[in-house]
Length: 313
Image (cartoon, rainbow, N blue to C red; front, side):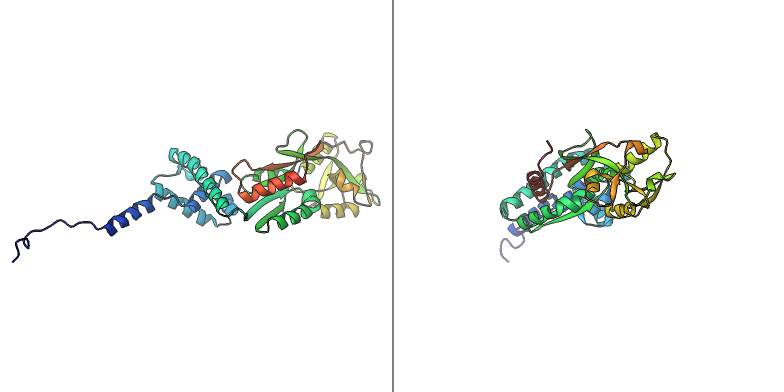
């Protein structure tokens, strides 16, 4: 027997073992960007469901990502009850870092791929802009940035304002004078319209063809007639201005449109206060961006629209 055969030595960790331990520690301390993106979206969209719509994921997937992030950091991100989405102290700290990390991630990708801008932009716009102004501009933008997808939705005023941030990156929305935000693009007088071939405006109650609830024009019309002591009834409701114009042309109802819309339609005429239809306010069209860090694709579209749609003077 050799002299040292009876000695027992403590096991020594190999270099490979040290590396494996180091990798394990590193893996547990890395914050995955997709988890941070889900967390920021839930906070900024004020809910799991709108965050899921914004990220094109299911609500269950977003909930799972939040749970994984909480497991990773070892703390709850929201105080109970979680449905109220009140950030915990740890959640408040992480939110600031999450935004910085996501911004750095985007910056790194931009540096690595300086000539390629891709991604989706979600935009809301009034019917007039969505159907008359934006199509040719967006076609030109798509030629400049073929990898950017634009999701353009037509919305009513209150709905679009509520969704700016949670669902929309950009909006072109209508406001009452002096109440808009962003860049003022144009001013349009709201007017009553009736058919030249019919007398719907002479009926009692006044039959109205209006946009859905939340529309600025709808609210103005109803308030003006009520204050004037005139009875009214909504006989046609549609989110399509073309449908409403067709109803008015047919003599079914009186409509409320922007003056520019009526001026392009043969067979329609505006109604005056002398005919019992009070003057309506002037609306303003504003280009606005979400009050959060925009994806590079959205920034590109915003800058492009600022160049193509000069501010109102």
